[in-house]
Image (tube, rainbow, N blue to C red; front, top):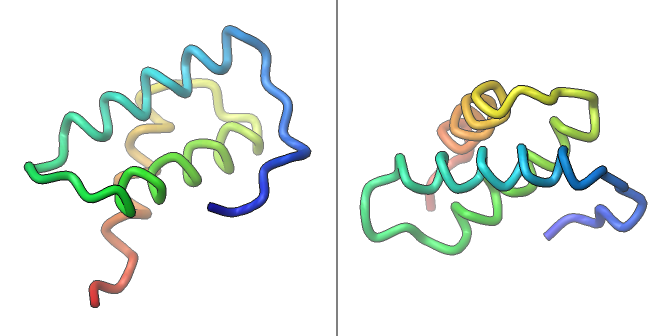
Length: 72
């Protein structure tokens, strides 16, 4: 996981990010790989760090980034 040690979020924003991550993971077909969850979480942290606060947008951006990652 990338270094997000300098990130600081309010409890409200953490709740929004958690909801976005849970919704993104729930939309993936089973089995969900841990690397996919990590990628989604990193995207949500990065996007929320840039100021996005809409859970649906955080979810959408994370899922789009997941699609862009080359598969092995």
